Length: 491
Image (cartoon, rainbow, N blue to C red; front, top):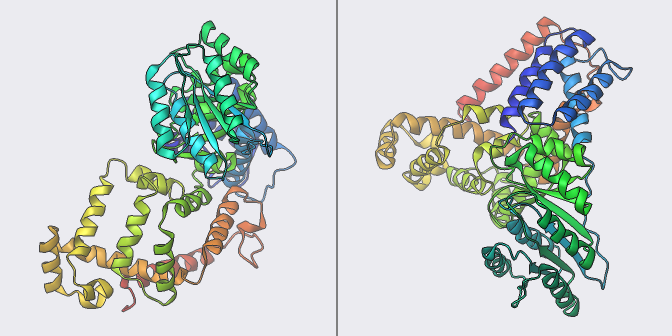
């Protein structure tokens, strides 16, 4: 999600590029575009107006550094205000040793409430805590079986009602069972409705007062836009919510709910659902989300996800090979196979600083099919050809490989050229460990986020503007380096 919001915000902020400094006049022009972008993303009107007032006050106030590029300056201010709009967030779940913590999940039907119960149980179990699920959604019989299936899938017990039609009694019995068995956390899956009604609120209020859960989480569907915010308001008035779990953030929702819910209700988003898989529940980080909305990427989340999903043993082997100066097409294939575990390529690109624009370029492309074609080309090569394609593959071999993989010889040539350039880059990064790479990416992201910071300037740079002659020299150097990389090691 957020692709359309990112594109429209970027267009609005780009109105300032090339301006000498930020003035009230050109800043207002850009903010009019920001207002349109946020309203089109279904952000609540009152939230938009108060947000823009804060941005305008920061932009024209004493904090403004007139020597900076106005577009970067306004991006930094918008970024800070977006973080304030969605945060702060405490991701911890209060627990005491020797005491059972009770979590109550509520929400409308179709919001992903039961699935979120399973995801949250898995997340807590991975922290070394014992978890029990309680099937208290008696309105939808399939919900009981669904929760039982999820429990078996993640290996946690599920308390199901034994002939009881009273959800309050079911919750009480489930919590009592968990306390008796010394289980650390109980998650109550309560009933939902297609819409908010008095009967639903009365039932949830009875559970809240009788069982006394430690925290109450509302599950809302990001795809429903402002309806999700309205639901949060209604539930919060009845139950005093502690946090929101927002689902379907991997879909094509416009993002208004994520930007509005904290400001309207005062209740923060604690977790977000990013897919159908049982492990697709993440902590919500306002600063990372703000970066993604503004096209700055989210490399920290990308690395965290890679650490969870990549084969760490295989990654260590590849790291050792790179340090030894080895990177072959077999390694390249394994790297692509690992990358596929992170999800759609468009999602991955959106998390890399500066690569968000590639998502629009790749829209409609069959990336999985393209990747299979690459694998077919590599599999049609001999071991020697995969080790040193630039030196080994001549015209005759190129035709043979193309025939074996069902592609044109030009595609084989393109792959070899691209690989040669990537090989040099990968070997150059071999000396940096994972922490150093993340630190460097954070430094670059911080420079974009806060252009006033010294992180935005190379060592020794005084912050002055380059002369036209200096810019031409830098451009020539970049073009020369690009040609060298295209030629590869033999150039």
